Amino acid sequence: MKTRTQTEFERNIRQGLSDHPKHLHSKFIYNKEGDALFQQIMQLPEYYLTRAEFDILEQNKTEICQHFYAKDGFDLIELGAGDGQKTKLILQELVDKKMAFNYLPIDISQNVLYDLKKNIEKEIPEVPVQCQQGSYFDVLKDLANYNKRKKVIIVLGSNIGNLLHDEAIDFLQQIQQSMGEFDMLFMGFDQKKHPQKIVNAYNDGQGVTEAFNKNLLKRINNEFDANFNLDDFMHWESYDPETGTARSFLISKKDQQVSIEQLDMKVEFHKWETIHTEISQKYDDHVVNWLAERSDLKIDTHFTDSEERYKNYVFKTS
Ligand SMILES: C[S@@+](CC[C@H](N)C(=O)[O-])C[C@H]1O[C@@H](n2cnc3c(N)ncnc32)[C@H](O)[C@@H]1O
Image (tube, rainbow, N blue to C red; front, side, top):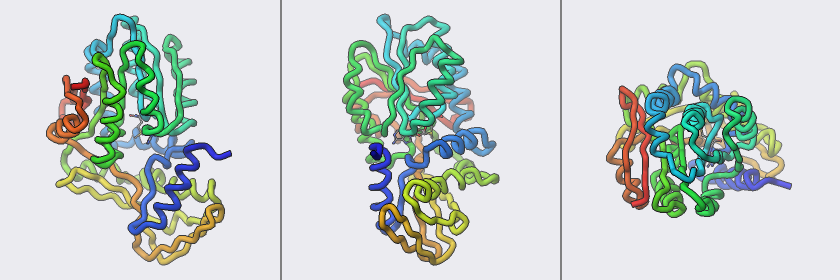
């Protein structure tokens, strides 16, 4: 039987490859291979986001954890946790400060959650971990059930940047609706900066980001019996400094037809036709304030790195 994620992926392929212009959702990049590629991306010299957020967490972990603290303990819920490399800094600090908490990572990739749990049990065995697989909007509904004690919701890696502003507001509103008076949201937002730095972050010289985006086509080949030739597509990155939106595309290098046997689909591509695969929105305080206002959240404080490349904001319900 198909999982909920596979059914959603199937719907996205049918719709996205029939639309004009064509599109596929970036959340489906993440399977075992996509997770491994993203872990390589985080090590790339061009991909400053992970290092910037790591520095912020390392330098401010004591103060950040004081914000998390609650006398009766708390539930630490992480949306889109990935491999949790940066979260482990926080988890270790919470353990060192003897705070009582449960860690509940949520991610669309079952593979990454399996590795994360194994890893934490080995490295910080004091942390009780309970994973949940699913996409944000599926699991957000259940968040309100965690209401026995303080809830701390964290979203790192500028995951929110994969959502268009309307979707981001919907996401923040749903989080806000699940929050009680003393709950908090701790979220990372990559900041606007020199456009070249942003383009380079998604256009590395080694082709890892290209392989990451092409993993969508590879998954369709493997899971739906399709015949995409990955070499017939190229990766392209663009950044619009006016809107702060970085966009990733796969572009067909020739006229071609692709069959997706299991979906009984034939997809025509013209030479230079695009498939939009990902957005990575960039922010400033003005935009984050606007998103917060639209979602009935208020910014309590924020933390940043010395170059202000990246910011982590603490939100409360207003
Ligand atoms: C850019 S990575 C960041 C991972 C981690 N937060 C970090 O900072 O290193 C995005 C993570 O969110 C997950 N993800 C992406 N879209 C998702 C969605 N719609 N619902 C749930 N998880 C999602 C991916 O599987 C991946 O692990």
